[in-house]
Amino acid sequence: MNEQQFKQQYKKAVHHMKADEQMKKRMEQNVNARRTMSRRPRKSLYIAASVVVAASIGLAAPTVWQQWNGTSPASPAIEVASNDILPPDASDGENKLSKGSVVIPKTELPSGDDKGIKASMLPLVVYHDHVYTESATTLEGTDALALRGAKLGTTNGGIHELSSKDDYKELASTIGEADIYAVKGYNTDFRIMSYTEIDGQVYAQLFDKTNDMTISGGADLIGKLNIKDHVTSAHWESFDSWNNGLQQLQSLSVDGALNDFVGALYNAKPVASTPELEERLYGKEDRKLIYLTLEDKTTVALVLFGEEGLVRYGHVPVFFEVEQGVFQKFWNSLGK
Picture 1: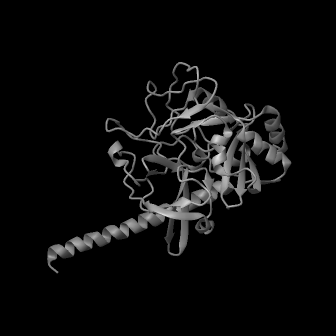
Picture 2: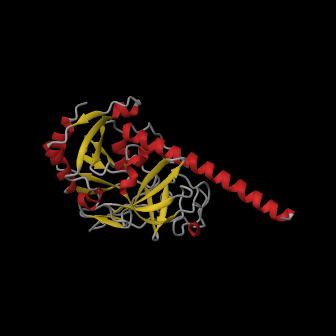
Picture 3: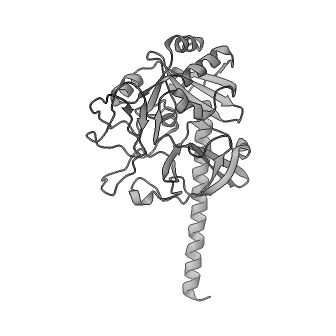
């Protein structure tokens, strides 16, 4: 082996060691974040360049895709919710308000003309020319193998705050290198999973495609989560507990009241997110969280807004207006 060959192999080995350490560190951070969310989402402020768990489940706001959006004149037929990876200028944001369905456009990728820091990026994976972002549904690594379907490929990383549109190629991601799989019981058009084993420990994370879709009722989004008739256990948490890090999760009976609420949520009216609506909702503290663990061991987090009677799943730019009587009865059953 000559000197040049030795140098090349040495550099490759060092690079591989660094990559392994970075991967392990990232996955450990991810699993810690998911465990925190299943128990208590951490208190969150508006954070540039990263998104914490509270934003991913829709408790902290405005959402990273919405907080700089402006509004545009009303459309007579549908509501259009902006859904960008990066916040657009206020003049470019679009939220058309009207009655009917909510259209969430295909996620807009950053262009090479974007200047400055590209902030507020969610963990994401590009699959089949669509962006899948960190899910508000979690699962423990020990339960992931049972849900692991066919292998779809391996991410190559490559996306960061300064990436351009050209970087968003198939299986590019912000999560480094990880194997991507289908999730049993879910359509790959909606959900995929990263699955990695490091030192005998499994790290898994779900990613949802919640863009390029039309929502006419709750079932068009919530139905994809397979909640109905599949809840095995449930908990709820007050805003005060979450906000102060008290971790006071309380058991919630899986009974008729919960089933009625879930049924009403499937039939709920969609309301497109706007900066004004988010400012009004997140400026108050009448929020409660429910955590629904399903038969497949996934846990779905939903945020309830008491005064408005609205429900939100993750960072999707849409709220659901549940029938008032059902919502209020369920809200009151949760206590204070």
